[in-house]
Image (cartoon, rainbow, N blue to C red; front, side, top):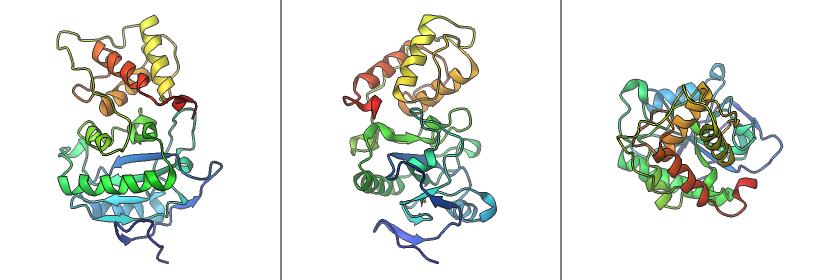
Length: 257
């Protein structure tokens, strides 16, 4: 049975069987952005539409900007997997998921083309307006699942989207090539402070003071989204300053929302 598109930007509604009712919260409060990680949008849509895949998304946006909807926005699509943000663990129930066609890091990771980004901007603005999604709740798949995912990655146009009113962004502090930062051999108050700031922003991390593998994954996820100049998982001054700047720019009460 064909569904009714939620947006006039939708070119086709291709229903996926992989969905269910949202649990608990009701209206979505997160817009979660992915890349497909496969060769073509057609392959992504085919997989997301197969019952045996047990995955889906609300939308797929191909390289030309053509939009396919697979799940109605008022339903729970299966796109986030094991994920956490700001203490929430059922991200599928609290989010709308968009898959942006890009073969991803394993297959060359090309730039996101202009027609695709232009349509994505329009679609994101609609979704944000429909559900009242706050800027700091426009997230990457890698933000909510940092140990498993890298998408949509460091080439994703976060700064451009923010300029269009989509997402939370600050100008990242430039990388100092003479500052290698610290990594897995480190422990102490500085590591704990960075872990505390990351957790305060929403990342699923505890302030242990030890630079464990999860900390490295979370730092990489933060860098992919907010400091893409160098994604190495190391805590350097550029990462710290960008994180401090981002936290300071949050709207009042955002951390508790």
